[in-house]
Image 1 (spheres, one colour):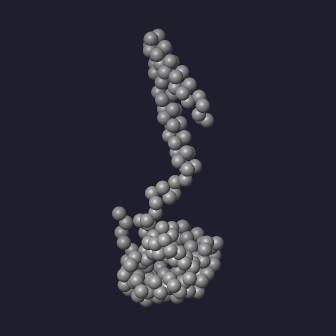
Image 2: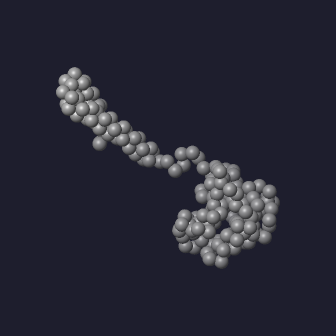
Image 3: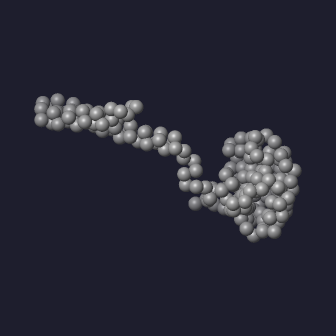
Length: 187
């Protein structure tokens, strides 16, 4: 379980961010300054990655990033109009607001990491692509095959050492069957 980030830490981070980065839209600066100066709103602000999945998500970007300059998400609606977003934020200060800030190397920034919380609205399979799933399946199958093959070979060696012809024949048959089942695999 993640510990909540204090309003004081969020305020300090926003002030630090505004002093170190220039945002693509000047209205973004106004919104962040408004948030800093309103405790109730600051209490309901959460910094996350992929804010587009949140019920009320705000994405703001600095000049050093190639991402979109500004997006505000409210349920299924999306706007690039910062004034509309500001009005909605101002009128609904008691509702949670999830903010994503895009700036150069944000994923490595310790100040940003200190205020980031896990996004509870991310789909379960968001970070897993079909290619990743196929790769994981292949790796699992190969690992099982390698383990079974090694195990059977050790038993075959043991049967040879003990001159146990019956076990040897049975084990080589199992090894042959295992290899034929996996003959069409790329490993």
